Image (cartoon, rainbow, N blue to C red; front, top):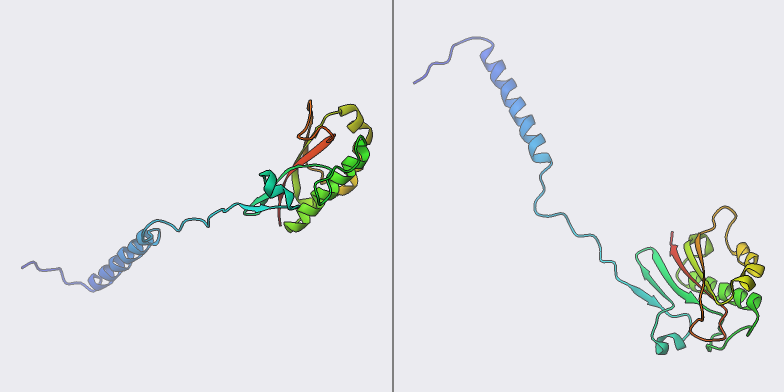
Length: 170
């Protein structure tokens, strides 16, 4: 049997070693977790329809996933799907932004939450003449990233302009 040297410092050194080992063990085990971390909550798409005819037409006016709302190209129609302002770019642009505002409000947001918009038009020159009508909807200094595209035609030949948007809700 081994004999340990007898000294007054022996118990003190042993206690220090035990504390040091215990501290190292606590630090080593502190980063360990049991099993995998919990999965983030599911991001389930939540479709929204501004008007009843949208469902029968086969699309959603908007889809919310988490705090992000993706809004389909919004056009100048009333609640029954009838064209507003035939041949009148200004009237159609006003109606588009009114419908876009209604969709944003229904989703719990507003124009300040819009981070991206795409404007499609069949007549860029006519749109440029009335484009300033969209500016009051956005707070000064908080206008979204915007893309303007001229297309040959939209889904209905009477539509002159359509706006799609992406919003980040608070």
